[in-house]
Length: 464
Image (cartoon, rainbow, N blue to C red; front, side):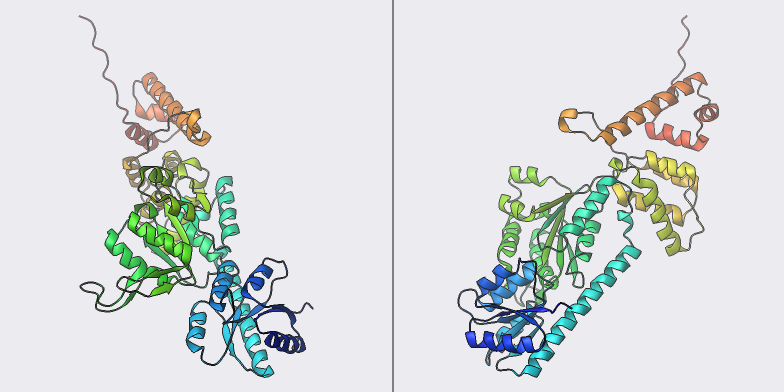
């Protein structure tokens, strides 16, 4: 059986040698580092340590800075702090920053054994929790990830590949495509899954309120600040923060956010004291940040910082094969929630769902299906669907890279319109006969006519 590896980081030679002997006697494999720089250089190796024992006071990189870097690059490795008498405040700071435990110098062999066993047990339990969470996530799969689209499957794989890094992720896409769902998916598959997932809508608050929401404030910072308030970054410490609609953030706040991303610290409003934070930053927007940078409304340096991993979620109209899967998944969810008697989506309604272009994307589809589960009247659902706004048909412009599916959908729409016009003309605008020849229901034909705003043209008047 392979022995667990313990990396000992201490500038004192006698401490390193004593720990090497004690740990070997306890059955551990030991690796020694005399400085923080040496310890960090060893971490990228394949033989990663099971536990790191880290001295707080060292020349060069101090223990706290080394801890921050370890937590950033290898958050799943437990770190035990080695502390001397009189370092209690620093030890408390280290625990807040993510250290698993501490061991005071001098220590006995029994203390060392118990501390390491405790750190490994905590990590084992965390791993079990993560595995259970992943199983539960798969069992209660987010409806938005029910997909047969190869593009969505690749997107999902990318999200899971980057989940266990601390790199910022920029999620782009139209309103309603599921950007928040994707951010939550990244969080749930990361080492931070057991910690908080905090969402901040940057477009929902005025700029001055957004600053206090993100970074918090001290009592007396402004009129009405009667007590200290932690910000969202503080609440997301150890977890993940999603900055939704980040393009709406003022340039002043963008500068402060850049400082947090660069240095991992910020100051509450009304405070001169820096607060350190360890939060994975995800950002989303439905706007073009390239255009915002060109216009000067978004800082280029911040754009480079958050655009490390870029994921673009396609609109629903570009993956129509997902519409039946999503609609049925939403139906199951809301039938169970509301105790509805609906068992399936009628063919006429499903056909209408497939033909709608969904400018509101997955969120709009969910609302339509939810309404049908509550009020299971197919004709009313069809009528309501015909009243929903539609997106303009895409213009075919190969130079601009119009998606083939969008071009195909537009061509199909035009062909259907011409076919309906021709059959209506042949039947003298007898709608029931036209529906029979077209092999669609009468209601479906009426809804198409309403959607296309197609009306019977008056017969030409005879010449006199």
